[in-house]
Image (tube, one colour):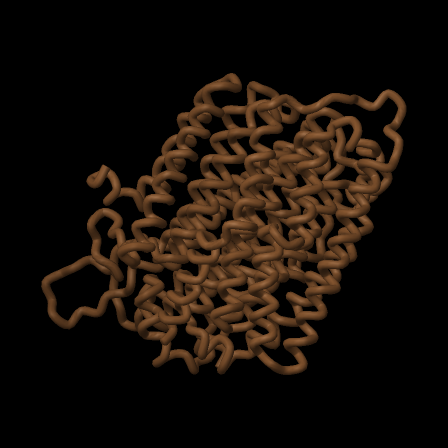
Length: 499
Length: 117
């Protein structure tokens, strides 16, 4: 194990990357699914290994091909990247346990080899973005993730042809975002002559006050904002989440946007440094109002949706607003709240989308009018959804409460009128969340089912993974020492890195 | 001023034309053309930044005072070109599927069909 462990940083990425073409070669449903699940579980175990190793002994640097950084590509597992890798591979593994029955309803069995190949590529890309310490490498992994996610979203076309237009729209917007990031990386290279993030960071003070660097920061920030669906760049997300196959939505809701949040944190704190980002550049005054508008307006928009997946998608944009607010606070508590919310929201939102997937499995629809009375028809699944909804609102004993608690502490630390205003805005947004979750509860328990509506529970292979996520979210809402501990270590590490 | 940095100007002009085409056209194929143009402008930007004034091709010869151009941006942009080709191919494949499903490649007509459905 010890010799295998020294290769863990690369194995966590290369295993999914190399298994993808093998998957694509096989027809039939079982083998590609089994291979994908095993590979994802292995990636998860390597990430856990890395996380505990980093927590005990500090960051690891891995030189690809034995080329020493800054010339070679360096993989860095530090408290932040190991934590995010653990979230990504964990969510992916949980979703895959559920995937087999669910995906057969939506994608023809003959295409599943390609489907799981794209899934593995997306996983490899996201893990790669997180661990790499090379700015250009980030762009490459970002495009691997994006291209495979366009494919995965368009696979929903069997159920609804609008999946195709959603994928196309995401392709246009996502490519523009990625190209903006490419320009930013290019400008950084022009000024520093290196692509290694740590190396750029070490030279950053001497070149910070130049026009190309300010342009680079602008391009990079807009690129990340598009990729993470930050308000007002969120236009692609609701369509993509609504029409993608259910397991794809569940997977992306927990991982894809979180990776971009990670990138934003990584560039702002590790490369530019908090002093430059929030002192010389007015990033707080740009990000904070957008975050507040995001979680207020998108929560309101979510109330008026007639499709359950769309409702949850808008709520995702709102929740991303909380993460951006945590980044914009530029304090250790705010950053802890952001990193913690990456974890907590991933587990809660994936659980919710999985229960919605189970409802779709039985009823064949996610429109609210078809889900009336679902509480009587599918009591176990619907109860899971309601518990997940409570976590989304941020009721005590749920993880949503924990991250909001830290975020409120963060905004109150400011000690000024804006801080109190932000706390009130968060409270109002949580009330909106109560309304949109209550709408579902009312529909599920107090409305009669439509005539001849399908009744009966989803199979256990769907219900058990759902409840793993729901139980998991309550576990991490009550036993917070682990998740909070890792988030605090990561935040301390980032704030320490900027001196 | 214009001719001093004409290569940057070409990049910027192509960049803006591409972005404008993506936003203003409702024909999906024209959108893809705009997107390619937009990506290519960035490729040109990378290629120009490797050039060093008076620099020659980066092949080591035994002369002490030869200046070499930087080959790294070219290598980088090869990767990005591959990504660009893949994006274009995938985008066009999606347009084909959209044409099959909606029987049109005009975005506004598609939006109308989606709303009425």
